[in-house]
Image (cartoon, rainbow, N blue to C red; front, top):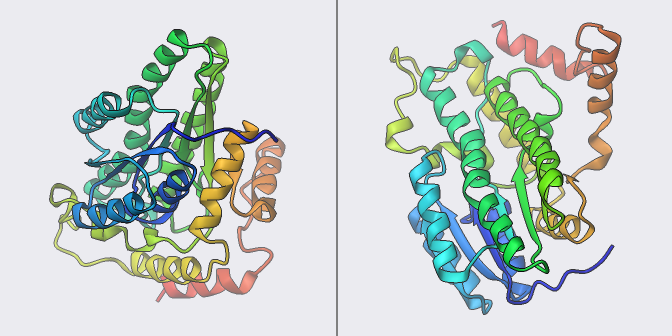
Length: 306
């Protein structure tokens, strides 16, 4: 592994007010980087920016709803005007939602896919040309685009449908970006982050749900049983995570130094990925995701069949 000199370089980070985004902003600042911090929540962003500035970094705060192309384009223009082409773009903003896949409303789908998928797509569309132009102007330029997916982008646990779909899309987008960049560049690199359960604010994504994405229960219902069950399981799993968001931020920079595409927070948790691949190759029906811990599957079934 080589160690990159990050001093004086620039990182653009979405979802920067909390979780992986904030920890990566802190680490970038400690490495001497300029940091463009974007988030949809203004007050948490202002507090995060103040903290990162106190570490000695030059920071550009930017309120941005990554669902909207124009806002990400404005983010790109502001970042380039202040610091030039970024060296690291961390398309990290994301939201979570659980429940039986047919119980999500149209607005649930639009919100989750808008943030998790289109937010990444907009970031790739806006910043990749900027980096390629910088490489053309300076062959010594080196750039990295990191997209936050999830282990849910590699497997399909039940009762998490809309989230699974969005994160599979991010993995596919990122793998294609990697291959496309290899056709045209030697200096701009793609990476995908696939974390497992890490204590972040993902379990409380509703706090960041804009007004135009709310009132998701179009028929007036409250959250369904499956959605309440999923919320409880997510909160418990995330709270119990032993790998921290700061650990993941370090893993990201380690991967950049090594030019490693796949970034895992829990590499020992990849067995279900192998099982899924074996099912696909053998053309067998999907394996029971709870076969190693059948009591968990029984608990979920019992909760949903009440």
